[in-house]
Length: 327
Image 1 (cartoon, helix red, strand yellow):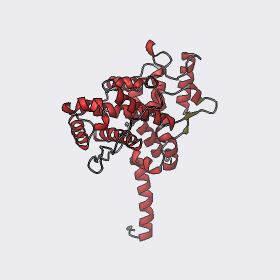
Image 2: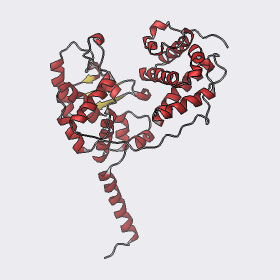
Image 3: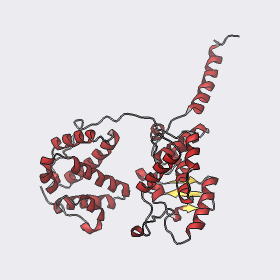
């Protein structure tokens, strides 16, 4: 097989430090793939998912195979993938997480194959197919939302979590939100290069707009990001998604909420509340930034009020048509 040279030097990808255990040769292959993703305008999260998948594979691969695969990842076999999947389930990682990693690995190996570095990908379907249980989203109950926001003790955090609850933003979208994306005049927020490369414009609810104006006055005019990191070594960079998750965990504990919720639960709540208020699936689709209506149908659930109202309306028509109601 031919040697593949990266189109950018390794220094262009400082995140490769997370994969320091791989040989320079393997890191060059990974750098070439990252350059390929950048050149085709894939979202930064796609690059991060690739690195996360490669690290998972490296950490969980059989110890007897580590030396050979760390030296040259193109030597991976279907049996290595089998062993990694088994180890991932024993961790235990969630099936959806394993599937996401497998897809990241598959894309990387397919790239190497297309570049002539690899004869074929070691990931084979249906051999490495993984069944992911279909679970309904878990929005927070109204009382839980009230209790959660009642214990938030900083304007920054209140504004941050309101963006998820009122605008349906993902944690990554809140983390990297620049002031330039917000127009307080008409009360809109533009989200570019989101998941699936979908751009969207969302409206700011009155409570979000009020909190945002207060936070802007408190923060000053020099910050590029709405929620910058407080860490000196990350000066000028946005607050990390992990820090946001940790803050939510702390507030949930303070509120006495024992159920496991993540920032994404607030996004679920946003969609559910819109549907319960009578918003159409098409509108929710646009506000959520989904590529297709099918994604919205999987992502959200019609809760009791919406389902019951539509059921009663439909049954009234059925009963009237059939004439079965007792007089």
